[in-house]
Image: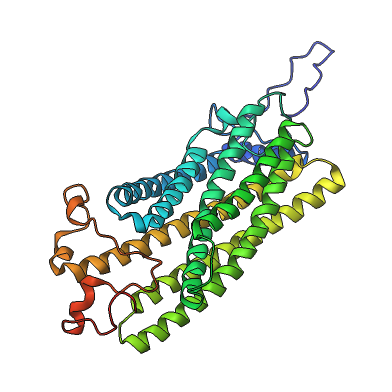
Length: 386
């Protein structure tokens, strides 16, 4: 509003009030104030009543929360079916769905819980342990780290199983380590780093900003390693399958296609994740080195863009993984029971006991018993040991 004008001291009438501001003038004024607050390191005023986030941030969080919630339902459905009906020697499939569901559930919880219930602001703020609302901040970081750990565990499990299958093919007499032991060792190392990160926060060595910086460095490096390992073992597995297909005259095209799908979507995701996390880590470290604080950079729209790119890529890869698994299941069911494809796909509860047999998605030396009729009777490759 314009500055007050002094009243006429000569006894005249006071000046007329200024004309009311139009909606356009008010909108521009609010935008200028928001930009000024962001430039000054102050969080812009919330637009949603009773919330710490703007209307756009609220819509984005709601959309991501609903997307992860849908994926949670699908993942839990697959996990329950696998846990109840898959044979014990295929327990790795159950672990796969368990990590899938855990990732989706933790992400849905993080996005659907209001920001005001956990943290003092929507964008991160430097919060120290045992001061202020540090418990909500710690819980928020734990949820984020748990979701990332579960998502990385999906592909680490895949890589470990492929490596074990190759060892079985090339080194049958070698005393090799069990694949789940290797998987537990790798995940234990990642969990140890996260435990040290939390301990440093609780020990007041650094604030919540340090936790975010360390997570960015950790997952950026893990993404780069996963890209190389996934590409290496995928190439070797597909080469072995092509050789076996030529020798045994048994088609492994479905397995090759699924492995290729997992490789492509996994590499795209990890390259995107490595780039985003590396940019985040370098930017945060340089800004912190210059200013000894990350408050200003977290108040910019850059943080919103980081959240959108990071988590929508996670939604995309979880949806693609589910689509590949459903496609593999549909192919196996159609070959085992040609009439199953005509009964629809939404009768899960009514047909659960009729569709318990699941085809292992990682199996290299699998001779699918139900598909041998496509070769005209007896199997050509010499049985399951081919």
